[in-house]
Image 1 (spheres, rainbow, N blue to C red):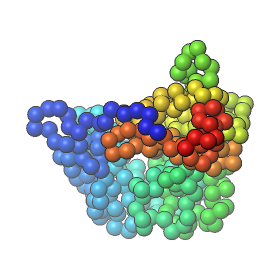
Image 2: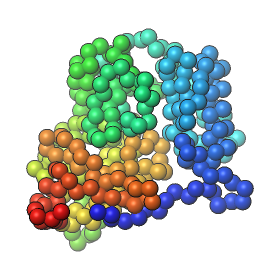
Image 3: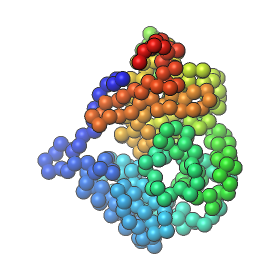
Image 4: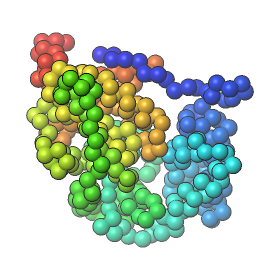
Length: 317
């Protein structure tokens, strides 16, 4: 089911002589991306780290990696003369974690950082990561004063299951994020959207403790037919509790907002919507085709939800 065509990102600035957007760092042109990579690599070299560029990622000489997607979105809105200072400050915090690479993780700081599996080098993990959403993995990470340190192996965190248990408890113990609501149609209470936003880097990661979040913030539980969630950036978790056929209107609006936020803001997590049932099994609800259309996949638990809400009948194909 194709719901709508989103506006595709501009491929160029519209100014004469400007280049197309970089394939790996689309917030920048090809030349701008090259300049950013040179600045970031130079900053690491000055700190004694040899690196190689692979797309939008810098790979360190001992296996560490630095993704430049978030940094590219930060510098995109800044004058280029300010880029060296911005990049150096960002790289300095990351390099500090490289210099303490052999320090065991403090269990009190263990959390879960959400990443798209496709963005992580194949050689990064030596353990099977948690996958709370299709295509989204939860990396074991430590929340340090200036940076979030990811762990691709268990050498510094111990037993996998114990580490994840600790990380889940730590996520649940974080302060409640800021909560706001929006009625898509002011005449229809069932079109209510809940927006959760956190100042920390684990707003989206709170999806792994969604039942606890809904209980504490909304005094509700995931209904039998499930909820719809969006995680456009690391700071955001957006939730809709479907009640009737008006949920289709919610899906349209939330899908547009999610793609736009994912495209524009630092810390992107996913441009898609997901369905999560009371058993915490997640199913991807939307995807983007090559032309920028958002496609809704009505299958499995999502089909069951659509039948329950009266969006389709049980005999529909």
